[in-house]
Image (cartoon, rainbow, N blue to C red; front, top):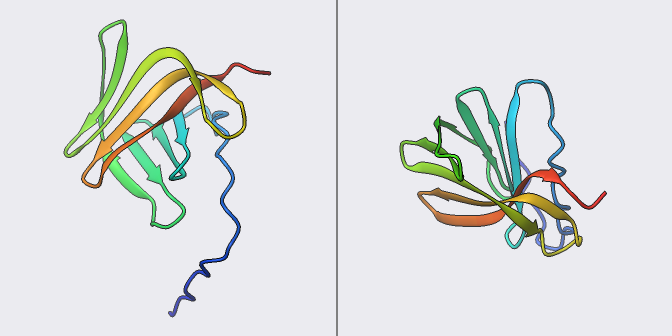
Length: 116
């Protein structure tokens, strides 16, 4: 099976809607510059980026009442309550999110979109 390389002049991906995909979805977050999205279902977090294959991480959840952490081997999602803007669409979200993994840390927003 061969794959066709992506053209560098392709249009920029659009931000990901964080509306839950199903009853299994526990949490969803997104970021821009670079674009990314992470979905937590059960004990697995899936990190999606336009230029990479989805990465799946086994995680556990810890909640101290102020911060929720999804933690795995070499991977973590830190969710802090507070207003967050995605920086592109003027959308406002309930949470600030940091996703840390082997390639660095991605910052963005998650939870409920509050600007409807």
